[in-house]
Length: 427
RNA sequence: GCCGGCUUAGCUUAGAUGGUAAGAGCACUCGGCUGUUAACCGAGAGGUCUCCGGUUCGAGUCCGGAAGCCGGCGCCA
Image (cartoon, rainbow, N blue to C red; front, top):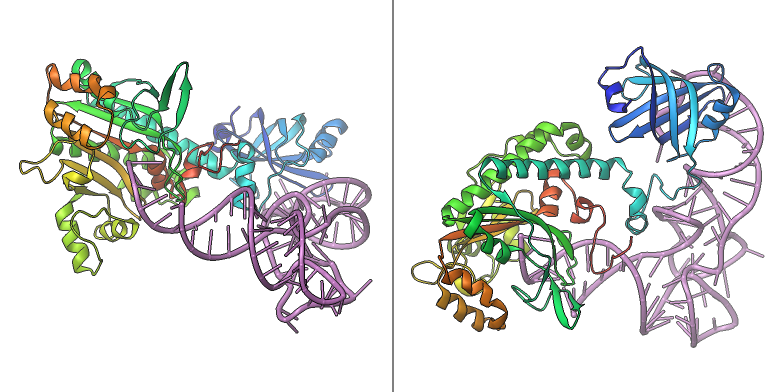
């Protein structure tokens, strides 16, 4: 029997057996109170000396925090028990002992991260993992409903892709390979057969970032759509985000609550999102007294100021062309790129970056060369502009940033089971 | 890459001005308790104060350096 079924009231009065781990353990001498958790919830078991045989009582008394146990007993409603239900044990068996597990009520961040493989048992991380699962499922469902195909591009690449300096490099037989920073270019290749594609894949950045929003390995949800312009691209993004937020609010209210996130905040997320152009954003910031000029990128304080303009998500659109990578489509005057960043509420920062893509081979080739890339490595990408090119757009969402927002987390490291940062490769 | 901070028991930590005070809570061990909610009560064990060097009669405490970690900025998702 799963504990969740007990908490739903489905087993009251029945004799059942549960299997799980000791979450709390107290004893008054004649009664052992053993709170047991499994994947579905936690419930208190009372083991009374008179109701079980001597060996079972000894095992119950001796079991400790995070030991695995099997308990048989009668389910009863009881206001004295946390959660309102308890199992009155008739049998108790310790399956695996847990002597001195290094988890404590109070832990410093370093201890917590050094023992992440054990700390994953915590209520907090369990809730986060469930919400992450639910959010991904919701987005997969949304893509399914909207005629997208899920695809699985390669993670090992030859070209260093956008940027160049901050890629992880590794030996690939007699060649050099890089870990992908984005699946975008491979997705672009796949729209010519499937038209609308999406993927969820790890992306890697070798940048020594030290912020609550950066990981060296993160999960990148990317989509690419044929016959799609900048405007349509934004609609896809906001509808996707809305659906994920609403679904999580609906399916995980208790998990959200325990994490300190009011589910109604997420159920209220509603497209369309606010939009502000880069030029207007610069004007606004200058009016506010920030020292920023056209052509500068936004720093964290600027992003916060822009985010504070509205309650919800906000798109910042049409950045200057020279600030953006070679593959983006430009406006008529070629001063701006047809791109947008989606800024999450509550200072969670940039959640999505996306753009309409340039379809002009000559232009892409030229800007590629100007950006210092080795054009030879991108010939295949230029082929896509040569054979049956179509208007198309796409975007990438940082899954951990999204989960951080959904769960009201302070750091993306808690949005993923095993964080990878410049200083953390173990466990 | 830049700036700032932290490191005392298994964990979280207290230790003004350098001087027989290295202390507490939790966890652990032993004993008690038949309704606990981070149970409680009694007893016990547990420390080369991150490392290296310096100042001093004397350094957990002051100075210099190293390492590890954290926070902020930049970069981005």
